Image 1 (tube, rainbow, N blue to C red):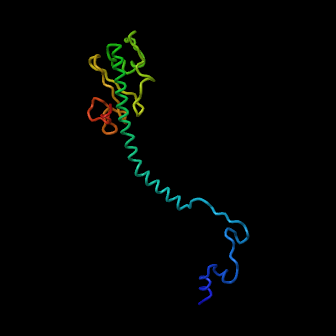
Image 2: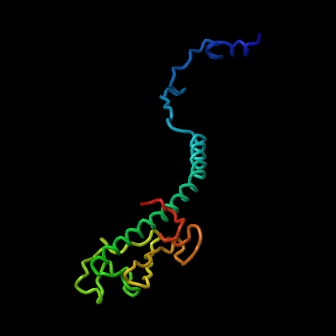
Length: 180
């Protein structure tokens, strides 16, 4: 058997084989105390970042899809709130706003409203739709009937499909139709 083989089989290695006592744990050859560095290795950090990025890539599209549909449902709810305010105003005035007066009549009286206007009928002013544009109003042919309150949707233009579709409670199949 060779000396190197015998030395590798001993517990202390070559130093113990030659009679050199082992160094105490935690000391450097020069007698300084060695400190272990706590923390994560670069590889562990990279693996954690890769896992988080993968999860984000899988979950984010679903969350943003829910955000858009929730905006549509919120617009529909706000439209119904404006329509309720219009109905309350009609009880005082005996009519709904004209096309010229529009929804502004809910927060400030017009010259035609007279002393019977008991508003404002909307606390905090007129709301905007979830995309930051004012709600639209089309007066009915007969002012004893409520006009049409609607939102132009995400694109802010009339018409559109999907997320860009107009939000109108009178149109069947609206997102959030099951609300209220």
